[in-house]
Every structure is written in structure tokens, then in C-alpha cells.
Image 1 (cartoon, rainbow, N blue to C red):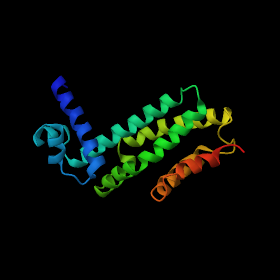
Image 2: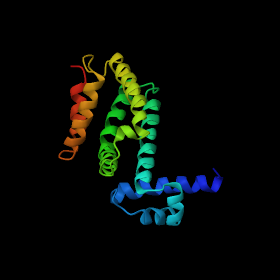
Image 3: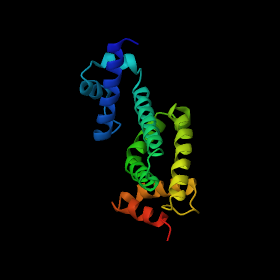
Image 4: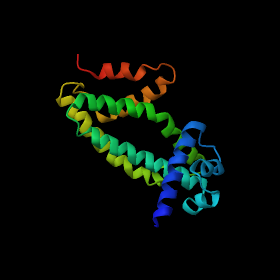
Length: 176
């Protein structure tokens, strides 16, 4: 891919992420192209459909989440790393769900996207973060990765009603 085409693609992805995050996934492709400073034809050369654009943005978000979690898994303070992972995932879940719903409305299941394969990285890294936090004595030893996933989902929903829900759940994960 030519350098200018690669820059346009990156600008489109960044603009789409910004526009979809601030105004919702129903925003038109014309508005995304305008935000990126390119014509709609350029957008469609890179992403033949709006669904392809949504999928690419979602993929980029999932890759970034996996990269962030992998960096956290290498942090010296295992408890702080686990806490940050939990809070960031809860905070970002609303937008992630908006992409999943938009893709589902277009007939695209998450398992059919390339982002579905990122789940393996995310789960493996969650296992590392949890084990390290347990070894450091900051998370109860009887907590499983499946428990953490369920609690993040619940915290994301509870956060809609109470901003401190995720902190309360994290306190409950701490050893007595």
C-alpha cells in the first residue's frame, strides 16, 4: 500500500472511531469522510461498506485492548495492573457493545470478524493478570478468570446506574 493511501486509511479509522464514539455508530460514512478530511470515494476505496468500516474500527479497538492488557501484564505492581485492566475494560465496554450491536444489526456476528480471534489473546492475558494479582495477595485466590469476566460485565451494566460500581466490585475481589 502506498504511503499516502496508508495515511488516509489511518486517518479514516481514527476519524471513524472519534465520530462513532461521540455521535454513535449510526453516523453516515459521509460524516466520517468529512471528519477525516477526505472524500467519500476515498473512504469507500478502503472500506467498501459501512459495515466494513465498523468492523475495521472494532478490530483496531480490540487489538489496542489486547496490546494494553499485555503491557499491563508486564507491570511490576501486579495489583495495580489488575485494577487498571478491570477499570478500563468496564469503562470501554459500552462503546465495545455499541460496535457489536451495530455489526449484529448488519448480520455480522463477532465470531465472524477478525476481532473474534483477539479474544484468545485477551483471555490468555487476563489469566496472567489474575494469577499475578493473586500471587501478590491483591485478589482472592478463589476467583477465576470467568468470575472476573462476569464481574466486568456486571460492573459495566451497574456503572450506568452508579459510577462507583466497578470500585465496589474490585473491593470485593480483595482478600479479607
